Image (cartoon, rainbow, N blue to C red; front, top):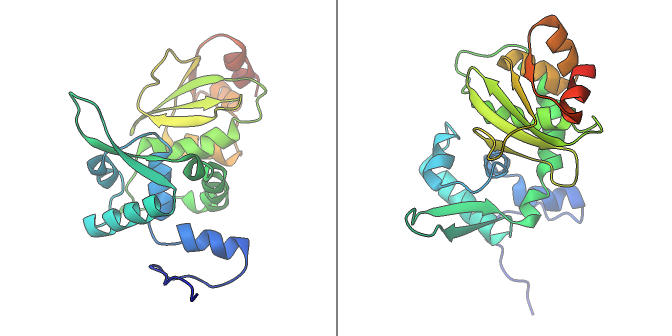
Length: 214
């Protein structure tokens, strides 16, 4: 029986990296994953937080992600009655991939270009990675001039989300985007930022103490 025709281009290489790029190598796909790692998102929310993507391309990429088992689409119950996209377990496995890409690309963030869009939660991935080795767990709420996001560090459920944390955070950080980039790159610790006055930290408990001592 002849092989089934492919609906997308493939590298046709028996290589794990090539197979992965067959699925996520198209332009915008990994950035859509970045947005869905925040949690379920409506199409309009995705389009708003992916400046530069056309509606046709976004719709096409989402369909590809559904077909490849990276994302699903479901209807919210009333009164919302809206459709949202969310990652499958397979899609969420891309979290460390995006963190590694962010670490590799962080040196390119030396200066913000006038044309650069920015969203606060885009800083969550590198920050989550930089806080992973603290030996403490909990929820950190971060406030930047551009907005707020939160990260859950330690334990088995590391994650991040846009906006305030749904529960009372263990730690609150207030800093600017450039300082957040420095912490994410590992060139500045939260403790050093607190001592230098570039980071405001509030909270008690094991996680707050670990951050102050870093």
